[in-house]
Structures are given as C-alpha cells and as structure tokens.
Length: 217
Image 1 (tube, rainbow, N blue to C red):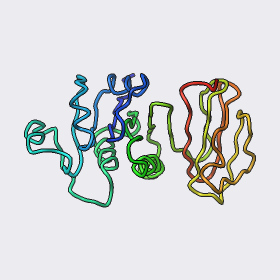
Image 2: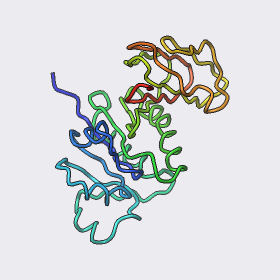
Image 3: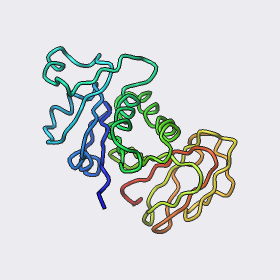
Image 4: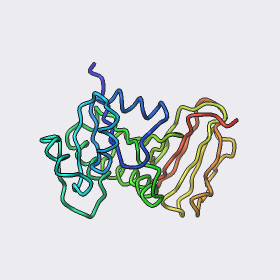
C-alpha cells in the first residue's frame, strides 16, 4: 500500500525551531511556501521540492525570476496567503491520501497568529475529511467536530477553543472533565490536562484543540 504524501505549508510567522515542526519540514514530500515566508525558506537550504504561493507583495523582481515556474501568483485580497497556500495544496494532492501540516503560522504579529489558528476551522469546513494539523514550537493544533479520540500521555496540557459558545463540550480522560460545558470565552476550556494515554472530546460544533509536546513539570 502506497504511503500517504506529507505536504507542509510554511506560513510567515516565526520560523520553527522545535525539532517536531523542523523535522516535518525536512521530511516533507513537498512544501507550499507563502510568499511572505520565502526569505526564511530560502535561507534554511532544505532539499525539498516546493512552490511559493501568494499575492507577490513580499517578493522582489529578482525573487520572481529566480523562482521561475515555482512561483504562483494569486491576485486577490479576500483571503490571506495561508488560505491561498492551502488551496494550492489541496488542489494538487488528494485529500484522502495526504497529510497536511502547517508550520510557521504563529509568532510575530498577534493578529496574524489568531487569524491563522482560526483558519483551521475554515479548512475543516472547506476540506471535510482532510488530515490537517498546525505545529508550533510548543505543540499541535487541530480542528475537530463530533467525537474524536486522541493519543496523549500523562500530564500533557490540553486546551480547547470553541467557535460556537452555545454548543456544549464533553470530554473523557482529562483531569477536569467537561460534561456539557459551555465555553463562552476562549480561556474557559484551556489549560486542562490528560490523565493517561488517550482522551476523547466531543462537540457538535467546531472546536480547536491544542496539545503540548511536553508534559507539565
């Protein structure tokens, strides 16, 4: 059976330093780089096939000439470069046989960070069934809806952010269980903790889940 492709989207926040997102970049089958991240990408000298996608406002004429057919201009302003890069990735690689990983989406300007994280819900709605995650230097974000069980470890820190405060959240396997809890503010379902090696979250509305790489000391 053929292995799933691993496609990494590089956004223009802080370039990753933790070994998990860095390894994702190094071992990717293909990288879709936002044009505003091209300077960081070109400086890291990773031998991975790639394209650069965006509106081009961050590229010099020299960059464009050097990139040649690896540069794809998308001239519209309704969505940011991360959305354009994901649209390219999902159009060129089958959703059912591909793992999509976003890195470099946090850091620098906080409004960009919040916008990029919230895009996970949009991607889950636009590409149902796709395996999409966001890796930072501290942990992993995914968007979920319905019931889902996650691999974990004792004292892993777990946070949930709901996009629909009126819809209850339930959990199994967390230190502070959520039994029909309504998180009316973003902070209200954060800083929870896994008790063992799996936990389950369920909600009929979209949620964003964050899991740390390291256990709480």
